Length: 462
Ligand code: AMP
Image (cartoon, rainbow, N blue to C red; front, side, top):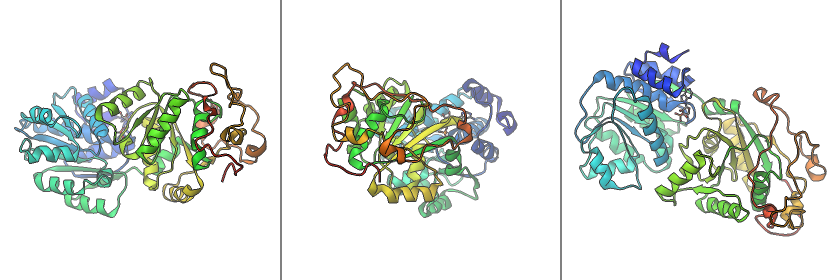
């Protein structure tokens, strides 16, 4: 299947050519023909499946074909997205895909100047990508209206609901013209979403790309059983290559459940000389943008994020997703690990599970079909955690004595030896070495007495 076979116009095909895409992803192959026909669409898919192009490409063609004038203080296509980051990415895609079609694209998101948004929307636009709150602000100020909307897209509707946008979405539905095409995307289909679909869509064509099936194939998922207050030590040892995990580090995205937790991880990493940024709701828009830009350029290739802030992050080359804390909602796990293995690449997800997170792990296994391969803790982990390990006294500038294991090194002895040996599970990885990689911090820096700093014996793994 090629894009040429889907009925898209020459300008759109040229734009795709420029981006180097020639084969549609499954959701694109299924969604583009009915959207070109003007049908409403319900797409059950998460980010990473190519859904942005699935709705953007045919919509661009429909806008071109209808060739209506840009409406004053309104737009012809409205795309609603839950977060600023996702809105920014969709707007960029719209610009890329619509480059040859001459369509005007704007985006408005919270946390920026409302006055500027008012000015830029005064003359209207072809495509507007917006977060719901900012859009309603402008509508309430009579700076914008929805009367010109021909195509309405809800992207990541379940996330918008999670963020409390239900009333905003109900209002927007009432304000938009009844005569329109609606394209509705959600990774999950809880009851509230089904109700929204019923309101928004008219006999939609349903296409579904189940997240578990798409992610499980390309993401190797590993698991450490580790106590909560020892997770930081384990993270540091992994990032410093003092404990080998599969895959070569390019960009590592680390998830915590709370903003405070994200800041704490960043602070502790910086104390041992590993630069990292945090991205969460308490960060200002410029701070978030800077963190993302540094992550994208791999200048600071470690980003610690909360679920909300990381929604919609689409950065090629995320080699590892580390779940420092497990999410309490299984779908969130799928969202998280979906940040790696973008656009057909392989990816690695590593989960740290503490004793009191076992129920979350059970839920994740049950609801997502995730298959984990358990990894042993470092053989010297107990000593390092208790502050008596060999890295404890490594002088600045001196290489840690616990050096990364060379490829094919014997399995660890002692406590770790009793753990199951990682096996080659995924045919796609056969023959690929599990290359270690690391971010160099101050040698010996990880010798801080673990994250908890508590002494005394305890079980290394649950
Ligand atoms: P999305 O699910 O829309 O966030 O897209 C995930 C990533 O896949 C983005 O980086 C897209 O640019 C990329 N992508 C989308 N469609 C294709 C395609 N047909 N071929 C290769 N990459 C694609």
